Image (cartoon, rainbow, N blue to C red; front, side, top):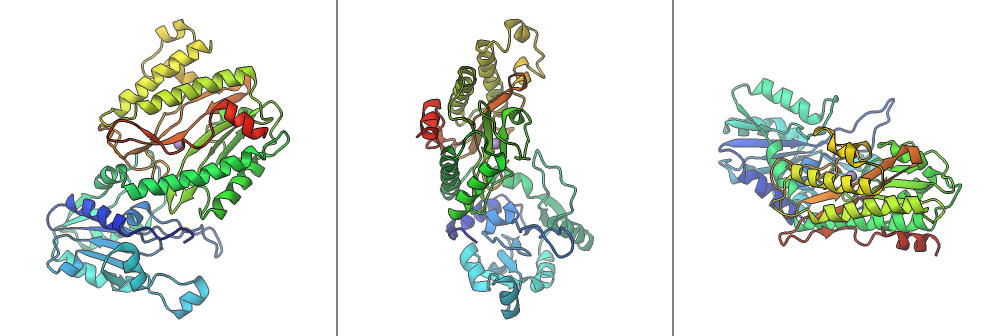
Length: 430
Ligand SMILES: [Mn+2]
């Protein structure tokens, strides 16, 4: 791991919250992600499943976490299974966690090798009546691949047909949505690394530069700051590419007079940051670009203030829609008559701002967290309005990461990342 070890107190708290919500006589099991194959003997880089990571801190393949709060023998209330390591594996793959290290990372006393799982699991299942499966119920999920978790579910249902089944996901959505202080600090650190990347490219951008050159500068800065790299596939979109919302080719040359929209965030210790900035290729906004930019910034700042405990996700998005509508009228992009006749399902502003304003942020970029119940303190959201103008050859989105606080004063974790027009222009021409 490139990152500093996380205090195990975080994982102890996380498990406590999960276990407090389990039914009597129930077991919950969490699996690592697979290492996904490419072809021949190549694989994708390993990326741990966020749930087992959240509950144990174990950032290694072929690990299993088992929680059984009512186990008769206390020793089996929290059990970790990790891949057996030995001298041969250490030489070829690098050392894996030994049992003592797994204890120190997770705060779990009972650690076994993975080869002991079947026997211990059978014995504990005979004591239990309910098994929690960790199915993926994220509102944006679209998974065709069978995961290690899926295989475990199929096998367990087959071998233990008499058990009742329960779902881990609703519990995780609830508890992962409200961040602990340690998590907010890690997200903040990811934001600080993103800031370094952004400041680096401000001094580097000029007409004729290629989008991938900017991508490379970001990555360089991220890795020398102990990030594994991008939290998600970066978007470096100059000119009209900004109007392709998920443009990730990053292979065009940046032209004098164009803007570049950059949706880029570093990860740190598996926590994500998610930033969007839009800057002028030549270091100066045109009058029109500046006008639209200021409108987006104003909507972003006003939307941020609406992130308070008790706010409703749906009403928040409707309110931001109203702010955007009046901004677009001021910019003469919408007429009052467009708004008078608008459909409730697809309001007029959506012609220029067609995506959501916010999502939860954490271990996943589009993180777990409730969106049908009121917002709570310590939830972390992005705020990312945009105005997209293909007819004018540019698109502008601005995005910061914000923590909801109990006193109603949202904390912007990206407040140090330059965003005001004057500051960006002066840094680009400094
Ligand atoms: Mn985002």
